[in-house]
Amino acid sequence: MALWIKNAVIATMDPDNPTAESAVVIGRYFAYVGTEKGAENFLREHPQKDLVVADCGGAFLMPGFNDSHMHYLHYVKAKKGSVNLTGCTSLREVLDRMKKGFETSYNRSSGLWLTGEGWNQDYFTDEKRFPTAKDLDQITRDYPMLIMRACFHIGVMNSKAMEILNINRDTVGRFGVYAETLPDGTPNGVVKEGVFDDIKAGLPAPSLQQLLDMMIDCQADLFREGLTSVQSDDLKYMPEGKAYDMLPMIAAAAQDGRLKLRIAEQALLPTMEELSCFLDEKGLDGTYGNNTFKISCVKILSDGSLGARTAYMRRPYADKPDTTGIAIYTQEALDELVLKAHRANMGAAIHAIGDGAVEMCLNSIERARREMPYLHPRHGIVHCQITDRRQIERFKELDVIAYIQPVFIDYDMHIVYDRVGRDLAETSYAWKDYIEEGVHAPFGTDCPVEQFNPLRGLYCAVTRCDLKGRGPYRPDQKVSRAQALYAYTAEGAYASRDEQIKGKIKPGMYADFITMDTNLLTCPDDAILSAKVLSTYVGGQLVYKK
Image 1 (tube, one colour):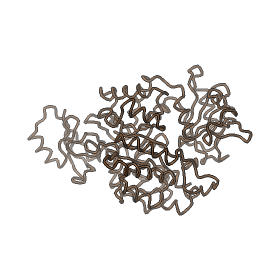
Image 2 (image 1 turned 45 degrees about the vertical axis):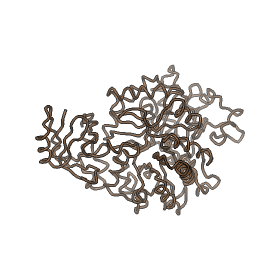
Image 3 (image 1 turned 180 degrees about the vertical axis):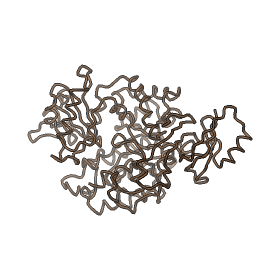
Image 4 (image 1 turned 60 degrees about the horizontal axis):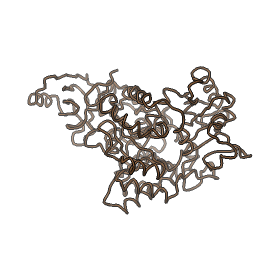
């Protein structure tokens, strides 16, 4: 099949040919990009039997968006079975929504836990605190319940959940700072970071086939928003001990065309045992998969979140001077994990939000590059929110990818000065500095922490305002429309080692593209948020039409 695209305003992301009005797709690839007359001449020289003409009517056309860091399987599972707690403005509202979910949609004979996601205590107008088991027990003490903060670094269980997991006054000590307790030593239901991750991974879940079917079904949601590629951290959202069974199932669905969304797996492997099993025993690395589903890098978590004050800082929090957050690893332990990945020529994408965690990550990457300079995997730091100028320079010196989520300032701009103080707030979220320093800085959303709609992030990146137009925060860090779109397309392809095959509208590249009703390069700022995707193509195939 061949497709002749006519009458379009094409933003190619190709510096050698930045704009075009016409393109020809043959099979899965762009074959020609340029003028309409040039396309006509190309087709005369290369006639196609089954040529379809697509008149775009002057619509804006660009490569499909690439979300450089999200949790697709988490989104899928939450959509199908979790109470939505996003936007709750009080603890009472959280409990009311959970009570309604328990009474109307929870299947008490399923064996599954009742879960809820998306609350943020900073938005509460009654009590700005974490919920506790005592609060959740008001809804039920007979069925297990877990509610997750919007950052997904904090969870709260009811008493039944703790009973099932054997978490009590005698056992909670083994979790250290990762489980909160009352003054008498009784756990209050709040769990953090790795302990929380392990609990999530061990929850009863649908079967592997059901999860795969859900992944295939939900890809339509992303196509509607113009996403054709994602880089996703999914291993901990697969049933415990089943990841190595599910990976080949996903790869097979991609190979036979059921899964069309291009997924690059950021494989979360938090311990040396798990990382060694992945690389050595299972023999998995960056060569695994196919053109739709692949493993792109190893994922490591080095700290928590700013909102929960678990992001690791070099100095105490300005609004809570008794803590610097949580460093999940010692420097030596983090070094060893990064070295292990580097030795296998696998990039490590390391979650780090606080400047203390960012410093540790840069140190680990520097050590790996110094000890094995003959290997050059694409290491990166995910989020890299709280930084100083020298750290940004080190990103460039060490060739470290900065995985950025611009939409984060919608919330963070209202807390960052209180959390870290003015001096550090004025050197943080420095997206323009990364880009102009020459650092690869792909954009994403961290969905379901934020919605996967890329236009929200695009708006925040070019305005430095929140989604209600308040701000700007650090206006000196506004990026241009061209820079933002490039970061959401071509830079994402670079991060997953796909820059030779996607992310641009260029001959030889995959025909992954979208048309929109709004020119994102020239429209007024407020029109970005109301822009609509008209159509989405993956590999030359129409997968969504408005």
